[in-house]
Length: 378
Ligand code: SF4
Image (cartoon, rainbow, N blue to C red; front, side, top):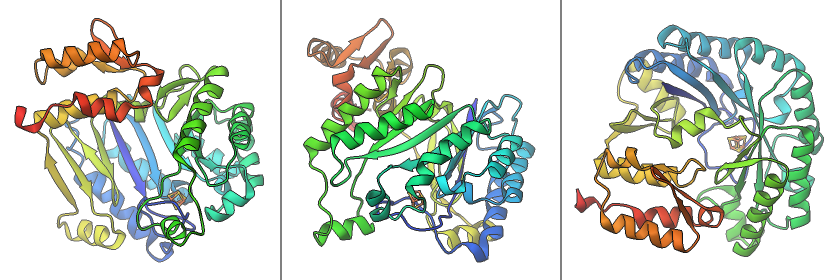
């Protein structure tokens, strides 16, 4: 089983904090881009070695900007060139202002069965300085509209650690989405990425980022509040009602193979990782002229081993030791480190797996890197 990710590099406007790849001036070439995406899917149809596709994920950018005929063209291409007989999850990222009864009806009949809504905040001043394209009213109304129109698997994105966001406001945001009836929440701490408008605001002193303490407090409030309401934290930033894990993202963390189409999209097939050009025009030209549009890195056994640790320790599933041992025998040093982490209450060990405790997950990346193999150990 494998997955397909399709990157839609269009946005209505530029959010100040965002460093994803997208363009706001896409209207003149949107058809050409969709044709290029379809062409890439066709050209790379053998990348996944005929594995059946379990999940499709439309990310971006803003996939909900796609016209109905553009979405149909993309989905038809996937169904034409890949084995979709076992397809079980098709996710579309949507911005609140694109959620209308007409769109929802069309998305559902096209096969989209999971909607990921970028709400981010219910605070007007935050939506304004972040330059989000939607209003507070749309943040409130879009989820109800999606549910009323039959979307049964709905996830929302929220951001914490925003300048001036109090803990009380943050709890209010979380409790609001719980009351709305969503099955899944992804919550991210605001980070100041180089080259973004936010970076400039911070440099000029126009925005003062939240302190690390506030960010950590809001993360703990997030975990506590969602757990109190029956949500499972199945990955550091992802929470769901039982049975509503994102299959597509869980498969990334389990090392399942995927093909990513579109500018800036990444792909992984167990041997190598590749990443597409991050420029719309260069991407379209390269696809049309059949020149190279992606770079590839062959993965060493050490890369694969370390990546299994890094991704697995971020999740509630943990790391399967048999899977790890198929790459390298687990040595005494590893066992000693694991025992120490268990004694410190940061890790739990079962016969065939290890996973971090709640407090361990706060330091997941540091713990994983301590357990990494060094490249010269190959
Ligand atoms: S809508 Fe999403 S992808 Fe587009 S600029 Fe805003 S955060 Fe970035």
